[in-house]
Each structure stands twice: as structure tokens, then as C-alpha cells.
Image 1 (spheres, protein in one colour):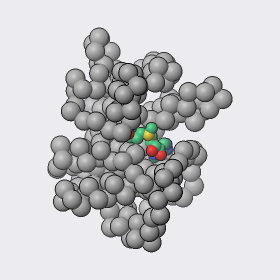
Image 2: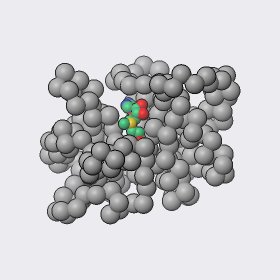
Image 3: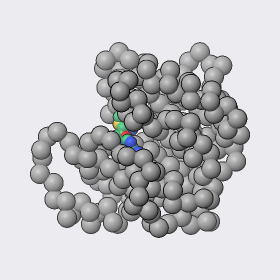
Length: 218
Ligand SMILES: C[S@@+](CC[C@H](N)C(=O)[O-])C[C@H]1O[C@@H](n2cnc3c(N)ncnc32)[C@H](O)[C@@H]1O
């Protein structure tokens, strides 16, 4: 079962700015239907972290229909859209954790996951907020523990500050992960996947080119 003790705080918004009224009772009833509960040893899992409006989770659930996607996000407005899309697309292999990814990481010591996606993690560009960034060495080592052999992590960002920070983190974790696409000049997401998330579109609109890092577990 999930622990409620966060080892790491979860920053950022739980509700959108629109102040649109949401029927929270109905929301939690629908969340309960798709809620991640426990791991089944017979199944392979994909971890999708900080899913916003859930575009990546729907994409992954369709692409890997024989695996279970766990979507981690506490942003209620985004999860409502994700839940609608799960039902509209009749998706059966997607579970939602309405909260911190650390709850999932600390709920298991088993290697349950075969893939991790982290699309546009909050960059926290100000120096005084740098400690809030998700992609640290400790975090990657935690992921290493729950990944199966040869599994991959995909990290996308359009923040030059975060790119530098991620490069440093990858270097510090060189005994744990191989940076698969390091020799390619082109790190663009669209060279790999035909997917657009809200933050991908924001980046393109502001003429910032998103980069994709692919790490393989050693
Ligand atoms: C910048 S948004 C990106 C959303 C989406 N992936 C996209 O590409 O549009 C980052 C999201 O990560 C979520 N997030 C941040 N830290 C998290 C954590 N520890 N566990 C789960 N979600 C987290 C935030 O709530 C936020 O919605």
C-alpha cells in the first residue's frame, strides 16, 4: 500500500487558475476507479511522472497496450482531462496516482518498471528554488532501484538551466545509467515521438527547442 509520508515535498499547483467549479466528490469517485493500488508481479509497469493533462499517459497506454501505465500527477484540472480521455478511448491499462511520485517509489523495493517518462518537469529556474528540481542524482538512483534490467528513462525539457542541471546529474550517475543519445546532435523530441503535450506546445510557441534525454539502466 502507498505510504502517506512524503520524503520529498510536492511543489506547484493542485488547481488551475480558472477558478472553474469542480465537483470534487465526483472527481475522487472517478479517481478511485482508476487509482493505482498495488503491484502485480506478473505485470510490467511504465511510470509516467508529472503528467499535467495526461497526453503522455494516453500515448504510452496506447503504444504499450500489454503494459500498465501509472500516471503520477496531483494537478486536479489536468487529471480530469486525463480521466475523460481514458474513458473516451476505452483504455484499460492506465492507473492514476493523484499525488507525489515518491509515494510510488517508496511503496516498493521490487523492479516493477520497464520504462519511465518525465516530460517537462518543472524547471524551477531561480537559484533559490533549485532544490525543488525533481531530476537529482538521488532521484535517478531511486529510479534505478525499481527499474528492470536494460530499462530506459526519457526526460524532456526546454529549459537551458534545467538541461545543464540534467547533464550534471547524468554525469554524476554515470555508474547507474548510460546516456543513450549522447552522441546525436539532434535531441529533439519529434525525432523520436509524434506527441505534443501542453508544455511542448508552450515551448514551441516561445521558440524554445525541447530536448530529449534517453538513459538506459546499467
Ligand atoms: C511543467 S508540468 C508538465 C506537464 C506535462 N508533462 C506536459 O508536458 O505538459 C510538470 C508537472 O509535474 C507535476 N509534478 C511535479 N513534481 C511532481 C512529483 N514529485 N510527483 C508527481 N508529479 C509532479 C506538477 O504537478 C506539474 O503538473
